[in-house]
Amino acid sequence: MAGKEILHKMKEKVGLGSSDTDSGKGKSKMSKHVTHGFHLVKGKSHHAMEDYVFAQFKQVDDKELGLFAIFDGHLSHDVPDYLKSHLFDNILKEPDFWTETEKAIRSAYQITDTNILEKAVDFGKGGSTAVTAILINCQKLVVANVGDSRAIICKNGVAKQLSVDHEPSKERESIEERGGFVSNFPGDVPRVDGQLAVARAFGDKSLKKHLSSEPHVVVDFIDEKTEFVILASDGLWKVMTNQEAADCIKHLKDARAAAKHLTEEALNRNSTDDISCIVVRFQ
Image 1 (cartoon, one colour):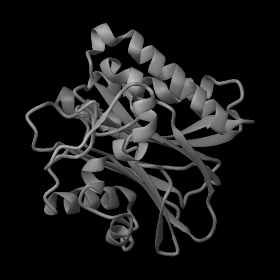
Image 2 (cartoon, one colour):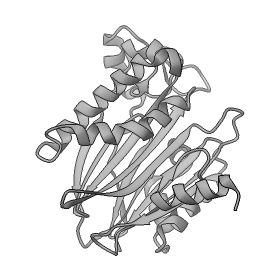
Image 3 (cartoon, one colour):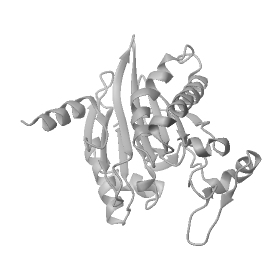
Image 4 (spheres, helix red, strand yellow):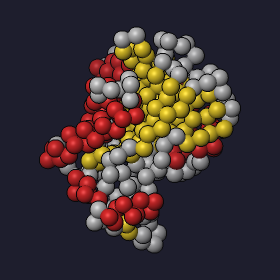
């Protein structure tokens, strides 16, 4: 077996995805019914793959955490790669993670963004969106995001969006209060300072005065109605509604097969962006 193939198998086993690993899966030790799978597809652009995935179950003391994230870089693969390696570590280092999880996540997002900005000389001017989901003991789900990578949960066949798409048009007032502007040229999406199509992101040092890295954070609970959670980059959501995505995989019990099916359906709908997707199944 070639070295690259061995590395691929090792990464797949632990559930780490990046531009050189396009698929993986894993399962909870606490509940055999909880599984995850991910799949990534490079878009039609000429730059290198800028989507990164983290998907892993982790034992911490007597608790189990499911850690899932999509990082969608723009003008950068260094920033999402850094996030994949450091964001969850920073979250778990927060002293009040177990008692005030939402507060800990907000703090860790800010610390991580500061660290990225300090490395801007090495990373360049690019940045990344992020959507993270932390599953605590297969019961409590804490989702946070900056940008337009999205998380949805499906219960009894009904999809509900957990994250918020941070669009410049929706945050025009706060952007202008920081001294920036939102462009709205015909044939194009609204952009911060005529450049970035999201209002919140990690990095982007040249725009940071006008951008926020404050995450939207929400808590949901897993019950007998919960079927699955989907995290995906905007390469999926540009061509598919939340309910369409849920309906697309409701018949698939294998989480990795479901993630792959979603990316393939997005391609069939002519998505040209990088597409990354994680599915966490509960039944």
